[in-house]
Amino acid sequence: MKKLFLLIAALMLALPLAACGSKGANGDANNKIVIWTQASADHPEGKMFADRVKTYNEKHPDGPKVEIQNITRAGAGSGYIDKLNAAITANNMPDIFTLDGPDIAAYADSGVIGELDPYLSKGFKKGFTKAIIDQGTVDGKFYGMGYSDSGVAIMYNEDMINALPNDIKASVPGPDKDWTWDDFVTLARKIDTFAKTSKDPAFKNYEIAVSTLLTDIPAGAYETGTYYFTPLLWGNGANIVDKDGVTVDGVLNSNKSVEALTKFAELFKEPALASATESEKAFYSGKTALSVSGFWYVNELTNNYPGLKFRTLRYPKMSKDFNGLYTPSGSWAFVRNGSEKDEKRIKKIVDVMEWLTNDEAAKEYYQKNGSIPTRINSIPEIKTNTNNPYHNEAWKVLKYQVENTNKARPVSPGYPYLSETFAKDVILKIAQNKTTDSATIKKYLDDAAKKIDQEFEKYRK
Image (cartoon, rainbow, N blue to C red):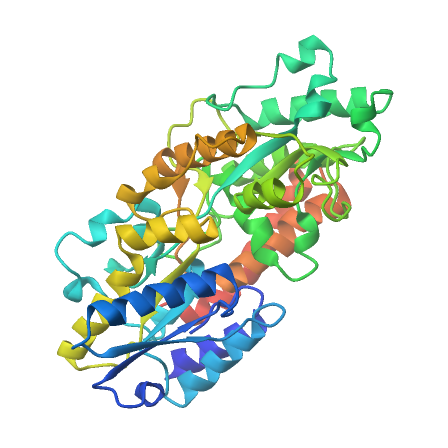
């Protein structure tokens, strides 16, 4: 029970990262299976779940009726998390609910959600991508079926790049080529130098070379910074927490971490190439030439900024010789109520979860909401031959990363605090203070590691 209260307290303090989701919520437990999702009913995501549930009920008239409840997130997600916290304390959770991937470990550690392996259809789990399996696995047990994946790439403004001298343009890699963080920073520096004296109309709104979306961190969306830039550590053989999910000192502040973040800090060396206070929608409005861009940029740019010619490149490696997984991924998943003990009912609940996350569902979710498929057999559904070449190129890059380089974020029961501290006390500090020396960066990491390790004492067995 202590872990349960710790979980609720931690989530109340970390709403920007909290995700959402016993028996009392189900009404007649034998005839109904209740699902909670964080998606509003009128959002494409909410509509796709409703359609999927409707079809399930039509195809299974003799089984329990499945009902879905959309609990819209307010602001940083408080509407959903508040209702989930109340349901946890009242032992009145739904049968199935959605959680953001990094939060699965905290709920599993507290016994709020139940494992899935004993109830899955043969071979079903193997149909997920490795990153999605890793995201949903805690201490060797599978808890979360991801229904969408994500990705991050580098985008550039084609008009700005075309205005550059040929020698600079030649340093831009193709969308099917690997490149390094050093290559990325060097390109940004050359663009910035040229832009400040150029009269080309492509640069009329230019403010700074690179958009990093670090403005999300002080606004409370800490995960953006962690999600975007933990891969720099991964690609240098480092991480923000050890494999046990609770050891940070000696890992987050390792020499490899310092080396990677010192290279990240080159973006803020005067004259700065990026800013912690960049303009809103900086890349969208032609104020930056380059952008570290989440996969959601593709549909947003295509649908709402048709005049912007955006090109897409792979996320840079920290070292050209690195061959491991390093690109950021992961998203929301379905989990089950851990207080349910009836084996036959659990099997029915897991059957519904499979229906919500099988190959067909993954294809539907991509078609209706642009969600990157979590199922290996559904990845070919990604469209790369439309009449929009910018859309096609972006999805080719993202598809490559999903299939070859995507890595799940660390599995830790204290992930919300870990992510917040890394984003605020390391990533944002480097940007705000324009810190470029490794000694100061090492101090930021040491201080952050100390804070996190103290917080994580409660999770150590």
